Length: 290
Image (cartoon, rainbow, N blue to C red; front, top):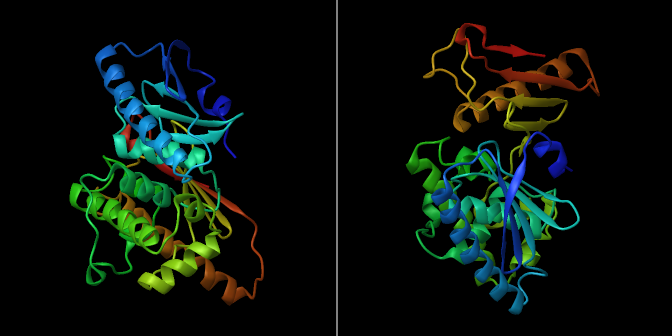
């Protein structure tokens, strides 16, 4: 479990705002006050929705604390209550998803579940996908980089949001609540995905990590720390970057290779390996590390 102090230890929060059911602390490095005001306006709208859902029994609580930073990676935690941290300018739907992941905390579920609940409750700009449009691909893997504004092309990002919206809308139409959906185990979610959409979750799981390595990916026998701006010194951006579709294929290739090694040598267990994809101010020094 990640904690706020691990991520924000070098940030000075010298301003604050108290809203209905939430408290905001603002990075002193931020000078764009109008952007902060816009973000707080969005948070007030989200707080109104949360209060309504608590009254309807969809949520146990609407109380949260938000830290707004000049930059960095968003994340949620449970430090004496629901806590979220956002970079300034995070989209409303992403912010709502992270708040819900703090309020409905379940480490076994991917961010895409909370994104779907956010999309359903915002109820604007999202479309249910027909069954014929849902097929197994990286778009339906529910991992949080799929929902970022600057990772995938806009059309693919929209498909990821619409799939999550479809998932939660179908769940609600079957009589399920958001709390019940968020209480599912990973196995329970996979069972629902398989039965309703013939889909499975990937073996790997993405979580936010730090400003240097925005993506932490855990997979059987492997842990990856990935700089979102990584560029390879040998491969062009058309061949490999930290864009989600390329990462997903690379992770699957690595899993197949690791399985082949285990089978060839008759290994039951392998020592855990850490892999770093890191960038540098000097593009020629960008490299892979183990």
